Length: 135
Image (cartoon, rainbow, N blue to C red; front, top):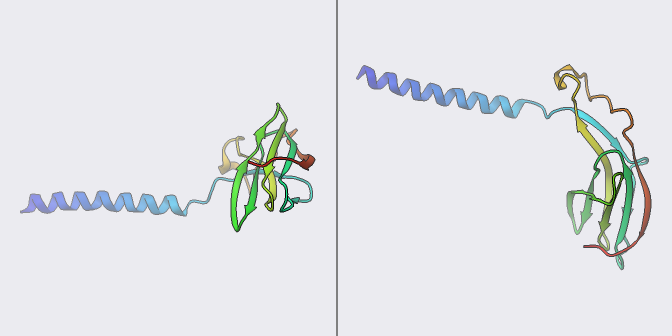
């Protein structure tokens, strides 16, 4: 009987450790990093009759939020060449919060106070908005 109680205690102690580890993981804040947003945080709205092609120039692959029909999703740009990327905005949709970002790599985020410094040479700018086909 004593052996059975000991086995149950080991099983439950393993479960408790797993539960505490899961709670610690959930309580840990998201990794910090750096972020550069397009100047003026543009909102680019496509007319309801036609889509838009938005070209950006960036030092890193940009992401943006695309809002359409009440849905809000993050989208990654299509590479055109080494520093140019395009977004195709469907008719009636909005492209918002175009940005580039990355994580800390100078000794890990534990050495950062707040966000990490932006790397030298990081940049982002919208260079062209023109009518075009959307996906």
